[in-house]
Image 1 (spheres, rainbow, N blue to C red):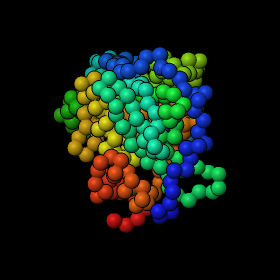
Image 2: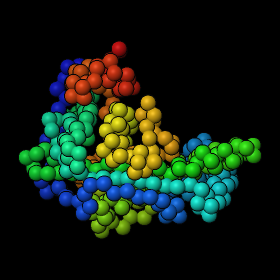
Image 3: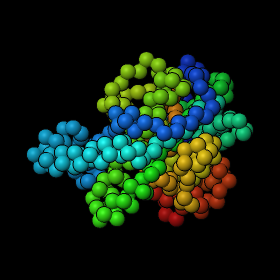
Image 4: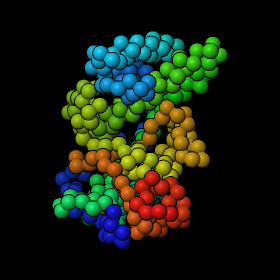
Length: 321
């Protein structure tokens, strides 16, 4: 970590002019009652087993001599409950997404335009010492500056947790804690599947920059597609407070039935939200540790106190507070 360093590295290595793609359906699109049977085909089961402390990739985990039999038993139990949820229509999946004109302004921020006017998105840049020629990246790098013309950025929020509280209460009333925990794990997997399904729909239809994509579910899990969907609070954009902007932009509470707690957690908990970047060079990366210089600059740009920024970014601070 370089105290007082110039951290605007990386922007010049991203090419823009030939990659700007106007969306087929700009603006906001709402999806009510996404069929759970459809989402089932997009489930990544590997994290499901990890939630039960069973290590291994699906479906190879079933052949593991140590945990294979237990993994298969839990998988079968999960699918019995999932079958019932689908049959009873006891969970609802909803989503909202939007694709908006945008440009990078300065080095690390994005200016987005929607029906209500201009919205600023604030991002952070990697600040660690790297080998020569290796850029310090920021998500804003993947959006073209104004001199290249109007670019675009997307946003989304999905949930598969509507109705989960009732399901859990029924199981707990029967003293069936195992099934209650299982229902929560299934809802989490369906929410992630909804995020995968929606991103596929955005790439191939709504934005339409990958109309010929033909990946199977494993290809989707392995992220072989063009573009990324980083979530506020995760390594590439660790500031949870940016969810407030995302939720206001998409009117998530009214359009998808998800709201934020005072600590920016999503409710229902089986929910996913984030940004869409379409640039073919876009990729996930961790911000890592940042210095006081960037924290002060970020606080100035966001109009927040340094103390508040330090509180939200405490895991990323490269110095003692």
